[in-house]
Image 1 (cartoon, one colour):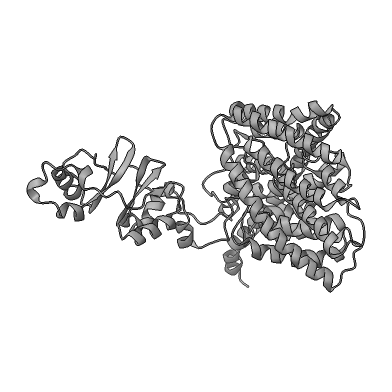
Image 2 (image 1 turned 90 degrees about the horizontal axis):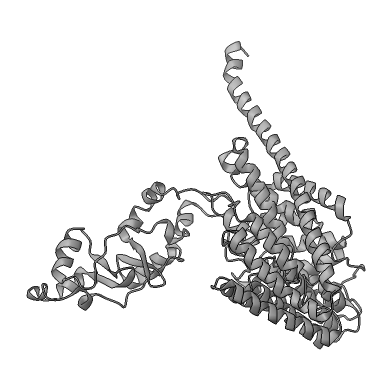
Length: 567
């Protein structure tokens, strides 16, 4: 090959070398993020579990019963003043930010949310540690990427966010593969995050090594036994999957209601009410079984339930009280995760099933229940199977677990504990249709007051603005829609004396600003209208018109939202 040929290839080789070097830099940064997250999570777990919760459980009963109230009040204060009035969301915040290619994870509420998590969980809130651990890891990864963005391509906009989330879960569960799979799987219901596998794996591994250097490698939920399984057990696993799917749907209904309560005003009053309920649940549980059923993540309660010769009625009572305690903690503004509450519920469902199908095999069905309930509730069947595999290391648990997980997924439909999951990656057109209306609504549209005359409507709004219809708004309150069709039915001599309020239509659909664009399109087609008003409750936000939809590509480009999914 001549010199010219070598010169022609040199830029390609330089580009290839640059890409390889950048990939190596990203992996090194992911490893550093993992080590940092391991330290952060170790500190979080030590303060929460050992400094606070262990001491709470040593208190007299009356004092332990009052600890959750103090924790929720402290969490409310931390969210209000330390987190700039942020919501208690942690894992949901990661999922929502993952799907928002226009922004990095907001660093301002991180410290306040973590303080709220320590207060909520360390003083007895019935949630898991993994939500704050995942959130802290995602925040560390996002902060590093924001500071060193020159090392990343446009396709890697969320790579360290995912790596940090994987590191957080890997550390808190002492399960690096679970952390990796969960962080990749949880943003979607039927897909996985792409272009993040190797960095997330590196971060999960280094985080795990860092964390266990301080805490040891003993698993959170050690499982004994090597279960031989037969066709009866496999059939029982399918039945557990059905039960877990049905109960997980009910669990989500309860949790969704609790999340709505958590968004209401007067957080202090909500915290007090929730704290009183949690104290009552703790005392009732202690009276029933002489042990702690509801304070903390639930590991002690689960160990109690897995002991032989426990009453099925008491196990059902425990499961019910744990759901109530989890929902109450959320409603009171507590900060924590739902992974472990789902694990606890799944194990309890399996514990009841073991009494029905195979009392001689006490470990199989609780493990199967964990896979089914966790996989269904969070829509993460792979992470659920891996979670159990890492804890047990025994293949006898895996096949029944897979069967239960698949059956539970079928029962669940589209339900999930997170409202921010999407089904899967989509193309440009589908992505646009799934945009919130806030991304495309015309907030500057001209409106007409209800006391204007029909003549003013015609000349100033319909003819003057070249529109077939116009929104009727008084102040900020939406009243209805006035169109040329209604005006044509009014005799011309009455135009000067008839108000718009007398001819406007109030029976047309009104879009919520929480709708997606596809929801608005369906409503417009069903009502056969060319314009739909968008409101936040009764407050008028703007409109969407058929012209806006035709020009959607140009509109999205102008507003900076016409970007492919960052997944």
